[in-house]
Amino acid sequence: MEKPFLGPRSVAVGALTRGQSRWNHAAVVPRVYMPKGAALSARMKIEAVALWAGEGAVISGRAAAHLHGVPWIDADTLVEVITANRRRCPGVIARQERISDDEVVTIDGMAVTSAARTAFDLGRHLPRNTAVAQLDALAGATGVREADALVLQRRYPGARGIRGARIALDLMDAGAQSPRETWLRLLVIDNGFPRPRTQIRVSDGSLTAYLDMGWDKPMIGLDYDGDYHLTNRRRYVTDLARDDMLRRERWIDIHVVKEHSPAYILHRLRRAWAERGLTPPEPSSR
Image 1 (cartoon, rainbow, N blue to C red):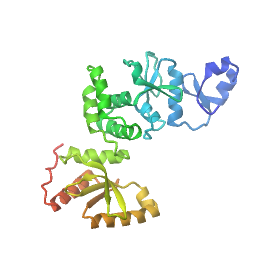
Image 2: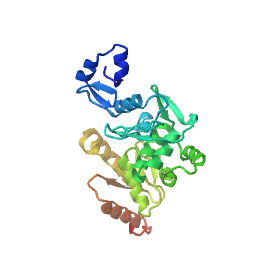
Image 3: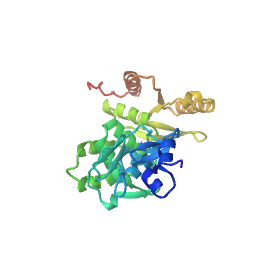
Image 4: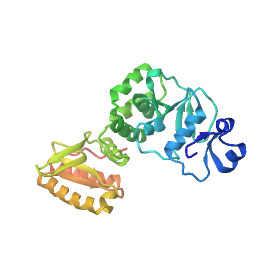
């Protein structure tokens, strides 16, 4: 059995003996097993928790976002589940919360919060930057909108974390393609710059480029370059042609890599703002 399985059930139907269950398998969560030495993925852990939680439980939070198509999760991430079961389980956050039938969907046989309820919960239960990164990816994967989650805010006006949800959902942007792009966007917003537009299309008729984010009127762009921009030779060559085209089209495109500090990024952005004859916002005191 390569997938998680409920030990007592397998023994009861004769698929395994108690000895086989104990000697050849390891518990992922109580009563749920996998073969010893098998790599535990985030997806398998979620499936294990769904078996542990049992009928009536609903996978929620980051685990639900992953099942909806968000990749930014690993096997160490705590799995959230809405359940009436008050048992404690390592690696699991069990929440006793209200949930309506129209907020539940089925994915591969598992009860999972809908995209709208998932967005609502991410905004309520996660720190702002983490929540927005998850919301950005969820919006990109499912098309969920702020308005969809606002319906649930009206349904549960006294829900815990509702203020955080409003803030995070207002910042949600389906155009972000990685958590670091989200981080960069929030950095410039928090330091007084207008909210940038994401995935800006620029073309000279023969070559088309998409800026991660930027501002159309001053023609200033921001691109977060992951390691693949430097390690993939074909991408590196393509980026050179892309940058030449952007310069010809009079765009200032600021490239950011993980080694750049926030202070350095903001210094370059303020300088670009000044080059366009605009007054950059004052440095934040935060």
